[in-house]
Amino acid sequence: MTPFVKAFFDEGTFTVSYVVREPHGKACAIIDSVLDFDHASGRTDTRSADKIIAYVQEEGLNVEWILESHVHADHLSAAPYIQDKVGGKIGIGDHITVVQDTFGKVFNEGTEFQRDGSQFDALFKEGDSFMIGQMRGDVLHTPGHTPACLTYVIGDAAFVGDTLFMPDFGTARCDFPGGSSTTLYQSIQKILALPDETRIFVGHDYKAPGRDEYAWETTVGEQKALNIHVGAGKSIEDFVSMRDARDATLAMPRLILPSLQVNMRAGQMPPADEQGNVFLKLPVNKL
Ligand SMILES: [Fe+2]
Image (cartoon, rainbow, N blue to C red; front, side, top):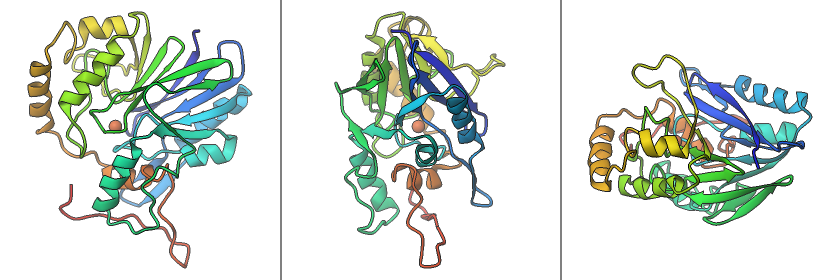
């Protein structure tokens, strides 16, 4: 099965969102959508999500799933906004409960914030499968960047979120709470064990040095041969020392504090106060 994949690139957060649809049908899933957020003003905008919605409507697609590869730390999810407009069930990995527990504490959330993943319509675990029309999706649990990261394998296409990036850029950071470079290396081996011709669609692209264009599609075979962090048989020891040294130099993503508070709630804002105002917290010296 070779699904048709349409990519939407958000240059503000370097995120790639995908619509993956049946080759001969109208069923589709939307993966890793973006709700635009201006940190300085605290304003949201639906421009990015509206492009996806317009595509879905123009093509007459039935949105069966709105999938998250993980709790993103660099952009807000538009899943509830999209669900409201075109339907679909919101799915994420079942280890979301670990992430909710960690950040429920960081943000001192009260008992209103459930840590059981109940904000989502479906929680997937390793080995689960689901249908998009006649097309089957299989779930790989690929933690390391975060504890709840999933890879969705749909036909010959693998949506790897933030595990592998393009071969010339390498891999995702592992220094967020619950992250582990050792675990990421092991997760990547699961992805590299897929057939060489499997198409890989990455969750971000930042243009590697020497490359002028954004890119997001590669293959398992290319990753195995060329990935600068894990390709050509790089050992786990070499990977872990490289990854940990590099992560120690990275700044926090610009939108990490708003993103986590919203994405751990399946893209919902925290509850409004009595006047209907919504606030996000800014914990001091916590991250
Ligand atoms: Fe991420």
